[in-house]
Amino acid sequence: MIKSLLLLSLLTLSLFGEQNWSHSYEEAKTQAFKEKKLVLVMISREGCDACWYMENIVFEDEGVQALVTENFIPVYLDTQNDGIPEAFDYAGTPTFHFTDAQGKKIGYRIGGASNIKDFTATLETILKEAKK
Image (cartoon, rainbow, N blue to C red):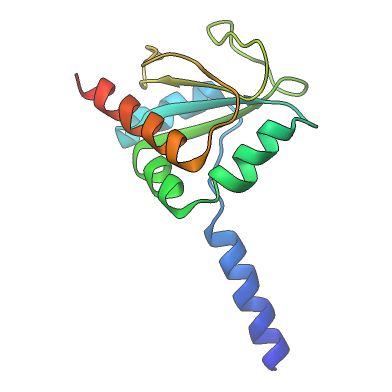
């Protein structure tokens, strides 16, 4: 009984920290329109150490999760498995783009990994810019 409760607790905690990433930019824009949010696009690829860092360290941070959940519809696009819209250029991975629900770019593309503090500052800058 105790083992079952412990397993259930661990499962619940691991599910709580996960972002709900879309794999379709078009669907994300529709959802962003409905929820009055922005779109955060992460272009990634399998085997990318910097992508792994962003996914497993930065996006697991509670503060980053809260900012993303409250303000963005996150989209994860894999260069090997997903179609990357022409509007999103990238030289390497990870690359981040930010748009409004109509697809208008906000800010500029961000290339490479960032630490939690710097990525939080980037998200806050994008939010301020979107309000102008």
